[in-house]
Length: 193
Image (cartoon, rainbow, N blue to C red):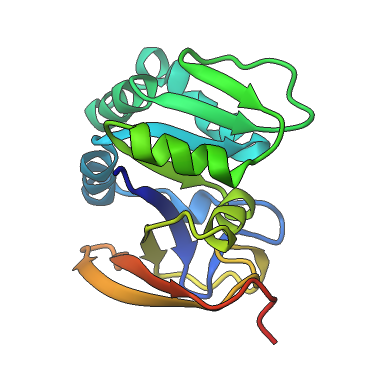
């Protein structure tokens, strides 16, 4: 069975974007970017909310815009995977191999995991929270950047208590640290007090 992985670049204090909506502080350097590319290579399907899809759709044409081998490589990885966008407002998509689903149905994702030939990735904290709450996420891949932003959009909304097992870690020269966790158990779907 394929795994569902929540991958995220976060500040040390747990935010994916600051209070102004900026995330330029999270841009990976070449070493981190190459590592991310290798992690993403086996992903066969990306699950996104609308906002995350609108950010990631850049990669549909990045190979024609960017003049960097790592960006070309990631663009090819992204373009080669299927994309499912969960949105009630998005009317059309601007990337190949992409479909819109109006609602997030845990049972549909569960079936997708059992029939997929490659791992799935969930992007965006809101959709990831729904997937974690439904017991669908198998692993979390965090890239913790050496910055404190003080507020903004949290990488992990307060939705559940989850036990994690550290499976791997990798420090980078720029101070970023990769942490790979397996989800051991989910203890209810109530907000954390």
